[in-house]
Length: 162
Image (cartoon, rainbow, N blue to C red; front, side, top):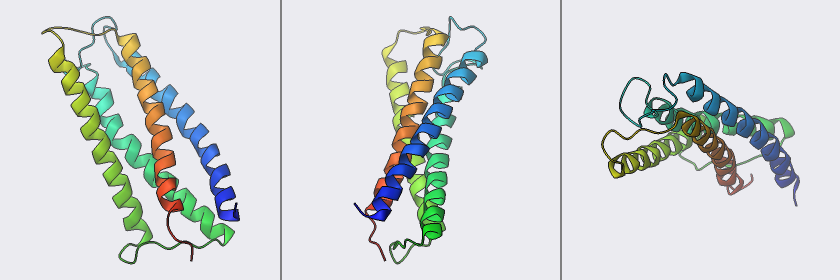
């Protein structure tokens, strides 16, 4: 196991804990206190729907985590003197923005599609228990935090060393 791999492993573990815990807590607590009536929460209807929390989370969480983790990792590699090679047509910034944008777009499509399928499958006027939706929101955020901490670093690890 090379020094780059060992460095990546410890760095990834630390960042996973930080991103997972903060996103789990924030994305469960904010919706919980944001619902007016916690016993009747709709997915799309009304001012306090679940879409109000999940869709922005599905855009900003993957984008922010991907961009931040790549920025931190590239800074760490440069500080440690370990070189990496990006594809010839990419600068560091464009690589980070492209990966973050693709992750955000894919996530928002999947989350919105899943919410739409659930909405269409439910009877008209059906509402959900807000406490459970807040817990589910936190779990989704924690899962996305793990995925988008690990995925960009996995891609970077596959890049050739200089």
